[in-house]
Length: 316
Image (cartoon, rainbow, N blue to C red; front, side):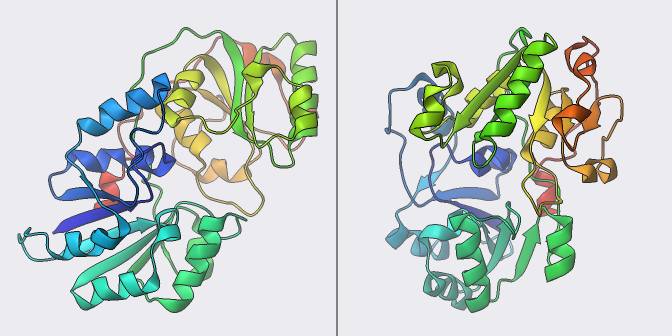
């Protein structure tokens, strides 16, 4: 059986990092709709380039992608499966998927975002689902899986090896500001009042919001995922702000377990998740619920994680 993992780009897409364990397998090939390996001279992007060069991958433009899969001479048992995340569907057509199907390729959709999310990638996926019958649809969100009849899988995270940084912050948050600016601003004030040192980096800020922040807190346009992982290595606790309607494992939860960090989250569903430990995972509804002494104490978790979330398990 041969698997093809479709990605929008070979540059910086978080799902590429999440699924990167699959690149260790001989019967898995990543195919890319865009080659952006020369996009910048940024040091983090150069690091990504080095990683990509070590991978036996085939860069494919959209007009070549379909034929490259169909014409692949791999014939172990002549079963070929395309796995596409909802991100990857944004630059491929229903007609392309139908052509793959006609040529004997099974097509699997992997939803890495909740159906309730207001993302273009989710809107595209919803439209695709209406017009194309996927062989399987797999979701990370148990609520979506139950409501829509999808398969459920929480094995969507590959551990990313970076240098271990010395811990010099107490609480880390990175993400799109959305409607969270006032909340995060108040949180920073409360952290300061409680001698807690936060590291907060935000994307999607307007001019007025930027004027209130230091340059270290502003992500201008993009932050490579390995840079995020390097940052979280510096902290004791990861802050998770789960979007409304999501019930599945968040990226921040994966990171806390895999890299042995405390987790502060507004997602009450973590109590039902593997590796939950009430000593190191706290739930808040409001800033007044936060135990600042717990955040800054030096007791760190050891979840004894051993690859349980790896996407290699997804293929099983």
